[in-house]
View 1 (cartoon, rainbow, N blue to C red):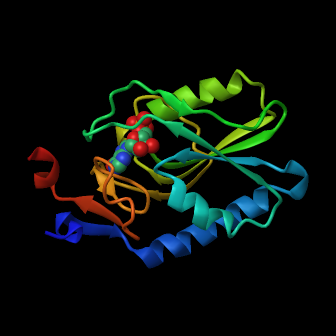
View 2: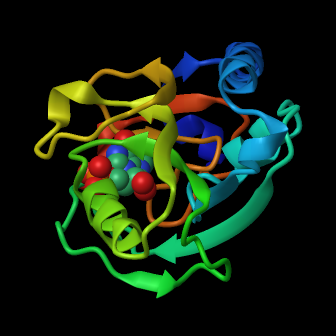
View 3: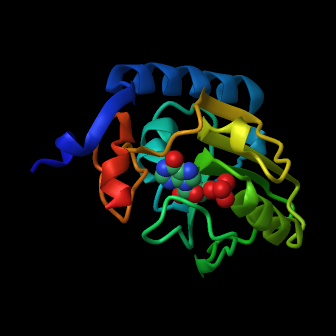
Length: 182
Ligand code: IMP
């Protein structure tokens, strides 16, 4: 069976993603200048595709860095335990930081990362997430830039996975519940 058969519906099409990401980049282009020279920190693995598309639309000078944090494993619920598997290479003291995330769900992952960053005394930290699921928030998170609000459904594609699969889909889709209740 193809992985496309595991998708119940397409929530955000490839075209809608591309159009909104260009708009979102323009919001950031209006906000940052060359002098800010922010460091975009991509939270892997989920945000890899979003970062790749977003950075191509940004007009201000910036740097890229990557962080790997632990995921849910084979589950659709957050364990609440966040582990940093790969940390930043950049010294962010006195730097402007933009965290690039795939989705803010309960907010626990970002709350942990924010604490971790603030301890290093950056000049500023802002959050840019492709998807925002505010109905599930458990920890308040200042989301500065986001692409789409999504309902309380488990989504995959465009970087987001279930048990490490579906990241390559060019759209955001809802997985059939039968896939994860099996
Ligand atoms: P939070 O800590 O609950 O905000 O969850 C953040 C992380 O959980 C994200 O970076 C995703 O990797 C993962 N996640 C949350 N919701 C979904 C979803 O609907 N699909 C796939 N991954 C998700």
